[in-house]
Length: 147
Ligand SMILES: [Cu+2]
Image (cartoon, rainbow, N blue to C red; front, top):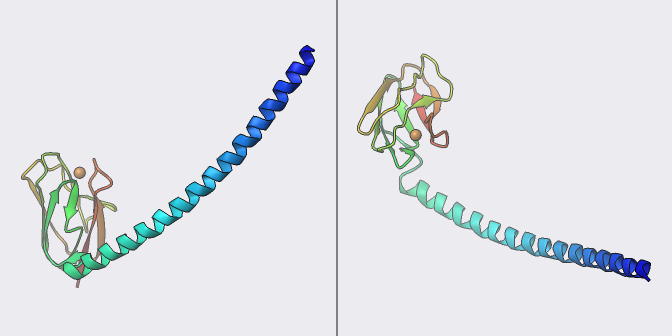
């Protein structure tokens, strides 16, 4: 009698597991479809916004002034002529720096800049220089130096 009870229990557990697996797979499928749906709408809106951004002012600004504010370098990409001195000014109360992804004589990084402090560097060699902020590596930007 006891054995029968165990068997029933075992069968019930197996059935419950199977139902669980079937339900889970259905839920996953439903999730995947909703995910792909939202993805397509997201990519739609993002492509729209990027196109409006590029028509407004362009992602690349021809300026030698870069503001560091709200945890971002603005403009993120600047284009300057050879021999230009670029000035970065920190407007955040948090300290930031200008740290070249590849440190060299062509682009030397700054110390940490407190609020209101500036860093100047004169580019003497053409090239595309990417840089970031050491304490906040998600802050990235680019200087394009043309002949
Ligand atoms: Cu920073």
